[in-house]
Length: 139
Image (tube, rainbow, N blue to C red; front, top):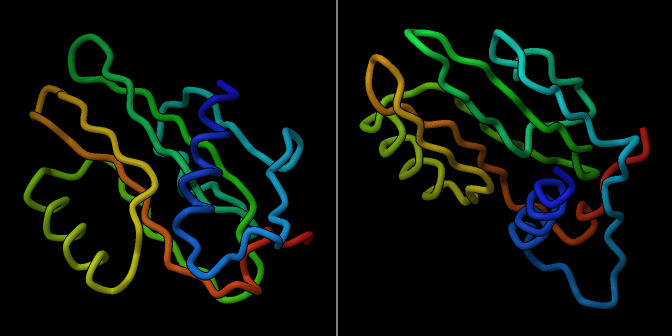
């Protein structure tokens, strides 16, 4: 599980433009990172205002059921935005990905799962931030 935290942080760090190597970015700690575990409903709605979902996943169950999981990490300081989706069809995902990419968002998480209704996508995009916004806030 720890590898997911590291991968999520590295992807988000890459997405944040203009960060120079000598500037320190604070790594999310185990106490600042929230792993929802597998739950019955999309956990994105329960994300604290100080965090954002770095990873959102679905696990299909037998029949028509599914379980959901998310990992929330602290938002960077300053003006930061993200978009998270769960369970959308391929055409919706492709349109959204194209639109967000055109607006400067970078995709940091993506999963495709086949459920009874077909393939569905889970994804997270983050907006590019300025150098002074790189470190997570300490709220």
